[in-house]
Amino acid sequence: MKCKHCKEPFNPVRFNQKFCLKDECVRVWVEFEKTKQWTKRKAKMKAELMTIQDYLKIAQQVFNKYIRLRDKGKPCISCQTTPKKENAGHYFSSGGHSNVRFDEDNVHLQCEACNSFLSGNLIEYKRHLKTRIGHENYILLRQRAYAPKKWEIDELKELIEHYKQKVKDFK
Image 1 (tube, one colour):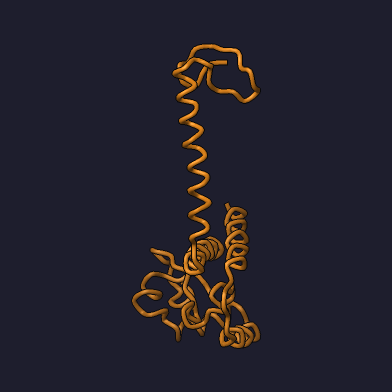
Image 2 (image 1 turned 90 degrees about the horizontal axis):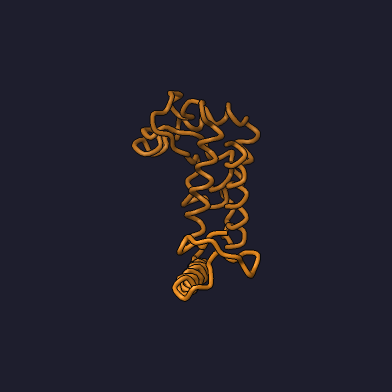
């Protein structure tokens, strides 16, 4: 086996030893281990400082990515054109209707023009949403939309992992 620092051959004393026992290599090894441990501690401290808003932002990004993959190849739900820039458009806004923020019936592929410049183009969105999910599911979606929802960090962590797995399954 060759030393990771000096590149000279050596016989390891432990099964996962990557550095030889020369003074210079041991110093490099110690620094390497300190850096590795600091990286782990820093990641743990950063995770402890995250707020619900941070988790909501991450969950929204992962969920939107899933929606864009799920609806890939479909037209914009509002204007029925092929989107140049794909967005995940919410029928019931995520800010005002937190309960359906991550509801797959509420979010569909939308073009940048409809989502950003026409504020969702909701009249056309509603018309095409009913045909896509069905009238009965639309009524149920409306009922869910007006129920209050307060997200918990553990709930958001589960949601993030769930949609990360769904994104991975698409690829």
